[in-house]
View 1 (cartoon, rainbow, N blue to C red):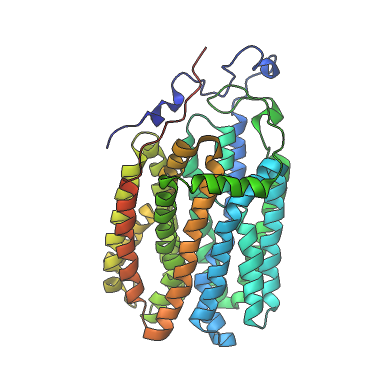
View 2: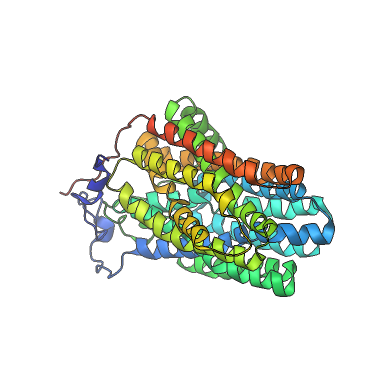
Length: 449
């Protein structure tokens, strides 16, 4: 792979975050002692914890398909439709959330989003009809988690970092996997011992606990605390952007006239279909179909979370050094090959080949995010966070389609095998799409003065 100039992110810029611009640009910094830890890293840490709290709900759907089917008689397809609505709104909310953060600030938007997740999770405890599942799981939780999606990470990264953007993107992306690692075994144990309702309450409390951290420690822009972005020059905070919805749509229309947008959106839709829509939603019930206990299957998903963290952070490091298109092609190709073998690995007990699949798939799970975000930044500059929000929307639409279709296929055929094979073929298509994305202009890095 050919090294890109993204690795120059630290060249000619002060990596301790002090201003390197003109005297006027750095006026706000004069007389301030240099902090031991740049404020950008504190904001990134709060973002990491916030994503963990918001991602707790994502651990539930795969665990609750069988309990809800047993208690209410709802089909796999019916429950999958509610999950697909949640995933679709998760994606479609992201670009508007990024624009709302430009208008009202990161902190306010995220606090409201956490409250929506908590409300939806708590209300589901009293549901008795499938339409309530659509409302609480689909609408409220979908809107809340969508406002804390990867566009949130992109906004924080773009505002607070110039150097180490690939690494930070990888770390923040891994927060979702960390939430899975924490909450999947916990929720599986709660569902097994106490039922699904206490698990839903646990998710609501996880979202509420994060709110004080966001309100007290999150800041919208480096200028709010008089510092430069990490590795860059001091810049004044821009005026709040008006017309958030109009801006999100305008950016979409502009990006939709370019070929790279459709290639990024199409490949990322396949990414969502083969991860959130397929493995996260249907792996546990599929393994249970083959006689594996729910707690054992959930533990395997948690192991995916462990290696997801490693793979995503490492992918961020690679993205700072190698061409993003080629990284994406490799990731999708390897993922597709692994899915073709999965039906042969299903068994009542955990065995070494299944463990190998889990480790391999975990390393590849969201490794696609850092290079995809880098390509958005390369192609669309200042609008990249919103463009990435729309690309993420396609990711979630792909996930939503497969979350629903997977349940329907299971209802009609009694097996998930056809879905695994189809997803493997789609990943091969995504690899080809990534390779034909044209190179864009690399974002300039402020030079040292």
